[in-house]
Every structure is written in C-alpha cells, then in structure tokens.
Length: 157
Image (spheres, rainbow, N blue to C red):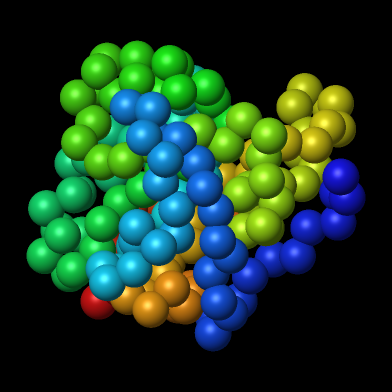
C-alpha cells in the first residue's frame, strides 16, 4: 500500500469508509450524512493525550450538538480496546476502529511522526469537519490534544 497521503481541503468530498464501532457494528460515511460531523483521528485509546481529548469532546458534546454536530473518533485501536476506552471514560459518541489505517490515509491523518527522536509513520491527530452532504468544511492536521475542542467550537461559531 502506498504511503503517499493527500490531505483534504474545504470543498473536497469526504472519502467513504467502512469501519467497526466500539460495539462491533459497521459504520460508513453514509451513516454520517444528514448531520454535520466532527470526525477526529487520534493515535491511541487510553494514552494520556487521547484520553484528555476524548474527555474534552465528551464534556463539550452538548455544545457541539447544539450547533448540529455529532462527534466521531477514529483510531487504529481494535474494537475491544475502543469498548474498554468508552466504558472507562463514559463516552457517549461513536469510536471507530481503523486497524489497517485505510481511513487515516484517505483522510490525510497518517504520516511521519517523531517520538524521542525516532521517526516513524503513524496516526496524526487530525480533525475533519464534514457537512450534511459529506463535503469537507474544514480539515485540521497535527492538532493538539489539549484545547482542541474549544478551538473547534470557536471555528464553527
């Protein structure tokens, strides 16, 4: 599989996907149509940054819903780990398992990272805002785990 990843821009059609959620149910882009969606990609359920980000999204969920948005998280974690993550942090939004990283690549949320000086490829913390018709409204890459939800709420008005 090619590691050439194209980032998305406003106006692009959101790429289709078919992924299992934390309950083992298949979800695809068509399930998101009709509602504005915050599709956020994160590296690892249970890691400190990803836990903080998920908790922030959970806390801000009423504000996003008031603006007509649903929240959907995507990570390379297996379904079982996503279920444990959901239960441990009382999350009430969808978490999708992208173990082969196809959706990450399609959405531009995959690339080079550095950890303690070691360069490797993996999930890039990214957020894609999608409208009711499946069109990208905004694509944010290499976002910070902390303060991310407040920045998004300001962006969407």
